[in-house]
Amino acid sequence: MSSAASSPALRTGPLLEVTGLERRFGRLKAVDDLTFALDRGQVFGFIGPNGAGKTTTMRVLATLDVPDAGDAVVNGCSVLVDPRRVRMSVGFMADRFVAYPNLDVMRFLEFFARAYGLVGRERRRTIRSVASFCGLVEFADRPATALSKGMGQRLHLAKTLLHDPALLILDEPAAGLDPHARIEFRALLGELAAAGKGILISSHILAELSENCDGVVVIERGRKVVAGSLDEIRRTVREHHAVTVRVLSDPDAAERFILTQPLVSAVVANGSSVAFDYAGTEDDMAGLLERALAAGLRVVEFGTTETNLEDIFLRTTRGRLQ
Image 1: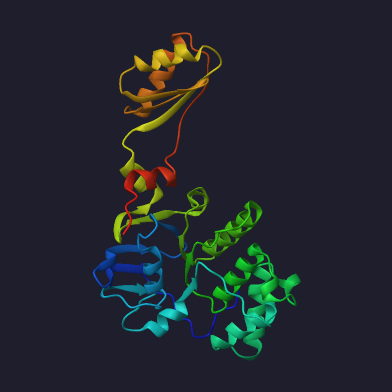
Image 2 (image 1 turned 90 degrees about the horizontal axis):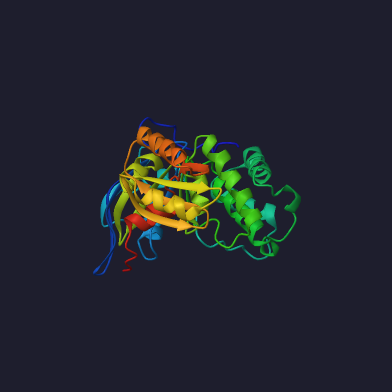
């Protein structure tokens, strides 16, 4: 896609650096000393219970609100010192798309392209580029208000990309989409990350985020609970391996055997499978499998289960509202 001529040049260091961010509404502290960073090409999930402060944080990063303390630096520019330059580096996709009446798809995009200061051939080329990338060309003459939910989200994303922002801030972009539309939208985000854009995405569909994200920021009651790469956080929130054994016959014998083994806890039998936490090393697990086979268990599956975003969310938050 074409780049807006006034976009700031790429800089070294994190694309987004949030430091000690606070936002208060009266006595309510919606965002409380929030600190995290995001690099170019990374996709970070931004998750937390309802009322955790996610949307407030995103609005501050998009310069739609002003923090009471702390700062956020996007592509080297502070949201406090130089919000205008920050806006040229940020594409904010709010949680609700509102299509203007009496505008078809291309005129809708042209309206926002003009608002971003694109002119002449550059504007026409950019509109064609984002419309093609988002799969909107065949809907060019359709009224923006007549689009399906999925196509409306594509138009919303296209509008967000017009000025070629380095950082995308997406608030619940897959909410209300059918499974096919979510898959297509996820593919678009993957292409954008591969092109070097940083993406901060809020969603309650944690299974969807697991397939997209390199890392995650979890907040509750405005405060950071945990932040970092998924691998780092998995090691933090789960000290033990989550192991599942599936046997061809006699699952009761498999359960009895597992219960007698050292380093095993939280054993749960479900049909022909037995799941448990295992505090041993991978060498210890190899020995456990050898003992299971020697005991006559007909093992057809033996493996660990990776900690997903739902596990991380449940293990790090208490579901407290504010």
